[in-house]
Amino acid sequence: MGMQFLEFARMCEHLEGISGRLDLIEEISTVLPRIDDEELPIFVRFIMGRVFPDWSPKKLGVGPNLLYDAVAYVVGTKRNAVREAINVTGDAGLAIEGLLANKEQTSFFVQEMDLLEVYHDFERVASAEGARSQREKLLLIRKLFANAQPLEGRYLARLMLEELRIGVGEGSVRDAVARAFDIDVHLVEHAHQAMNDLGEVALLARRDPAALSEVLIEPFRPVKMMLAQAGSIAAQIEDHGEVAIEYKYDGSRFQFHKVGDVCRIYSRRLEEVTGSLPDIVMHLSRATSHDVILDGEVVAVQDGRPMPFQYVIRRFRRKHQVDAMMEKIEVVPRIFDILYLDGTTLMDRPLTERRRILEDVLDAHVAPQFLVTDAADAEAIYADAVSLGHEGVMVKVPASPYTPGVRGRLWVKVKPGVETLDLAVIGAEWGEGRRAKMFGSFLLAVQDQGRLLPVGKVATGITDEALADLYALLRDSVIAHSGKEVTLEPLVVFEVGYSEIQASPNYESGYALRFPRFVGVREDKGVDEVESLDSLIERYRQQRPSDP
Image (cartoon, rainbow, N blue to C red):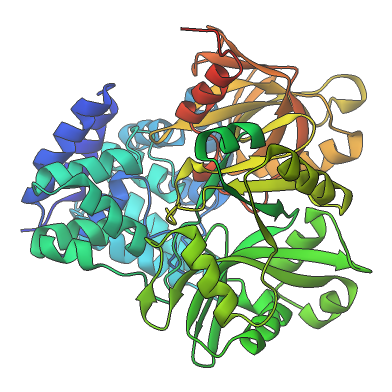
């Protein structure tokens, strides 16, 4: 007997009421062994608010309006009534639960749903294509809500919006899997880095724990990219003696996978973008005869000088008339790392060795790297980088392994001017005067184990033109109103500059930004990639070295 979706919903409700991370891990770890093999990967993804692995080409593609239409039909009302109910609660899940509870029973027979059935319906929603796809999606979603008990409706809605709101992040699930199957957490993490799907890792942990250490990355299953923290050149040299310095390009991160004549490109968010970048495929397939996974940056150039990031992102988004766009915007690859070569994983090798291999197997497009021990030499390279039109430099520890998805101090980024953070946009406030018909300020959040915690508002640095663009981008993601304030479905990431991080009781994160300033929209980043609370606290401490 498989797990009923109602049982899953009750479990989510229980977890939602638990505030301590260790208690969450304990609760999840007691459940995992009870779930059968077929359901285990689905349960693990669902509990994190995901339907498919990050790298999967399957996407639900259910926006708020489609959801409201389906619920409206099932409860016998209009879309606006659903929207209004959501406005009252500020939570689509709770609002839909309430609507389902209040509806008259229209059917004598409501079919019980199990976890697998719900997942298969989600697969059907994701695979709907063509002119009738929205209609197909709508019918499938209607069916789900028609069979849903009110509590099930809460979590169905949140899963569709990929925002479960129960505070269970990847770190908690990783630790729960390790505890549930009595396995070293480092083995679970190793397998997760390679497979990039905790659902499959959990299944392997149960079936064949010894295989966890043998898991290798595979071409065409992209892994999360290694990330950097903000830092200084002097501190890295002081800590490590020798450092590797590379230019920090104002481009878009990508992963290039090649086996034989088959090449695919993945964006920072692990979406396949091969069709938008045929020139990058051409450049790199000509530069090596090996099977490889490469990490690099796509940079737009004009007359040999780099162009701003906005030009690159236009190419990433382009699905039609790519040839015309290629003529307008020239892009080139800058490769700085190699993760896989001819069947061998290289991620555990030190950076210096990976670099030697990269230079051996790639005939062109390798990004420059400088090994330095002297701070003055490093600063000169930094000045050159800025004068060439780059964002700054990356300072990397030569012995560092490649750690997917980890934002550690083995790689730090150094940029001139104001410090910036990538933050989720979770709300907005209507403007005044000539800005009264658009949003004038935006509520921003850091992430903490699956929760988004407010850290301040930004209104400075946004032109009227940019505000109009932001309103067009965000207006369909409003899920609640309260006076002049709106709650937004968290879909968009802002890069925000600031002068200082301050401790503050005014925001749930416990911190606030002094003099925040809008820099731009990070279209290459998803909300799960925004600054973590831990990283924010680390930045706060670094700016106050005298604090205990």
